[in-house]
Image (cartoon, rainbow, N blue to C red; front, side, top):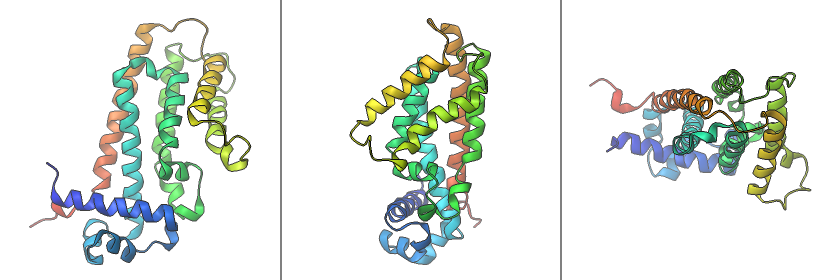
Length: 231
């Protein structure tokens, strides 16, 4: 059973997320969050010393929840780590999380300065580790020039395209994910069936990296948990 202070912290983060989507980072005050939860302003500060730390914790929780969802998919089927499956699955999971999508799209009005702080370094490092493992085990073509850039550019358009034009709004999210999977499969993966041992090895390596990421994020969310205070 979780500590009651953790339960209260999660209620604070829930309210902060709803207000953030509705009002944007600059307009949300600690008073607004406290009022939405039905607690005093001082109680919020027991958990996070200031507004910026609170919203950083919110982004950590969003990223941890998203990563947990991806991790569960890999555990259920190690072949999900194949680039076309992993990238399209991550696209679907991310698209269903409005806060993460706004963060990825660099919504300055919503996040203020938080967009640059929100876990991009960890995400970049994890993506690099994923691509390196794929190359080592022959699951990504080695003849594609600047493959990291090419993969990033090919994928990013699916996340940002809707912000540039509404021409394709009628295409279902699952259909967009299928198109992304097709592009990754035909452009970046070798022909033929992948080596099952290579798939299993990369799944184990990536799974361990994701578990470590989630563990670190979960600790960071409640770094100022009053349950840890002395006395």
